[in-house]
Length: 447
Image 1 (cartoon, helix red, strand yellow):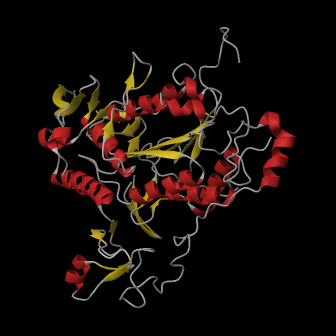
Image 2 (spheres, helix red, strand yellow; image 1 turned 180 degrees about the vertical axis):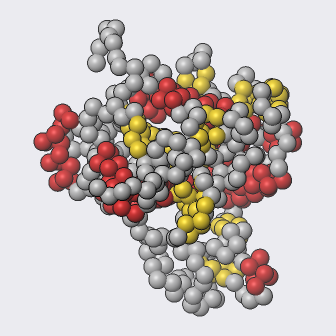
C-alpha cells in the first residue's frame, strides 16, 4: 500500500555466442489479459517460464558465476537437473528490455574481466576500474573525474575515496584501511557457548537439533521479492528489505537464494524446485520469505491485473510438507510473508475499557509462519527504508536471536508493532512447531 505516514513516505505493499546455443524459445498461451507468457525450453528438455529464468540467471550472476544451470526438478532422476546451459540466445530471441540486456552484459563482462585482470567497482559510480599499477593502492576513476570535473581517486583496499599521498602509495589515510575488516560491524549479536550448553543440558528434548557449523552443513533460505509489476505500482523500497534479509540470513549461516520479479507460475515453480534441493538433507532448518503485493486470495505475480496472476500461500506449505519435501522432514521451516491481505486499515477506534518400516507421519508439521498483517488488512512499506515488518524482524533477530527461540522472537516483533505501529499488526499462522527452535548464531554444536 502506498500512503504517506508521519515518519516518511510509505507504500502499500557480452559473451561468445558459441556458448549460447542450447536454448530454444517457445510460447504458451495463458488465460490472462497480459497476453502471451514466454516459456524457455532448455536443451535438457525442461520448460521454465521466462520470468523465473531471468530471476535464476540473475541469482547465478550474483553468485559470481559466468554460467547457468537448470534449476528445475528432474522427475526421472529425482533431483535438481543442474545441467549447465549458456545464456545469450535468451537476450536475442526473448523480448528482453534494454535494461535487462545491459544488466546481463555488464555483469558477465565484469566477471570475465575479473579473471583476466584486476578490476573493482568504483565506490563513486560503481563502474569497474582496472588497477594498472599493482604496487599502488590509489586508483583514479576517469568516469567520476569527468563527471565532477575534479580528480576522483579511491583506495583499492578499503574502496573509499582516497586520503593521503598519491604516488606509489602502499596505504591510505582512511580509518581502518589495511585491517582485516573495514566494513561496518555486523549488528547480529552472537550466542555465547555457556548459554547454548546450558539450554541443551536443560531442554535438549524440547529443542530442535542443530547441525554442526562446518562446511558440510548446507542451510538454505529462499527469498522471493517482487518489485516491478506490469499493472500494479512498483514496490519502491523493497530493495532495502532484500538486502537486510540477505545480511541477516548470511549472519545466521544460511545460503540465500534470491529471486526477483516472478509470476504466480514462476513462484510456484521456484518453490517446488527449492523444496527438492539436495542441500536440505544436510541442513537443520530453512527459511522462506515472500515479499510482494497481495490480497485475501494470495500473493500477486508481476503480471497480475484482475486476479489472474495470484500465488496461493497454501502452496508454500504444500511444497514443504512431509510427503513433498523429505529433506526437511522433522526440521523447522520458517515462513515470512510481507504483503497486503486486503484493503482494510489495521486500526480501529474503540472506547477504552530411523528405520525403513512404513509408518504414518503428520502431513504438515514443524512450520512457523509470520505474516506482515492480519487478514483483510494492508501492510505498509517505507519507500526509503523498506517495510516496517521486515526491518523490525531484522532488528529483533539481530538483538535477541542469540538467546530467544523463534516463537519468542516473533512475539517480540508483535509487541513492537503493538507499541509503535498502530495501523498494522503481524500474525502467526499454521504454526506446528513441536519443539523450540533456537538459531544459536555463530556457534558450533555443543553435545
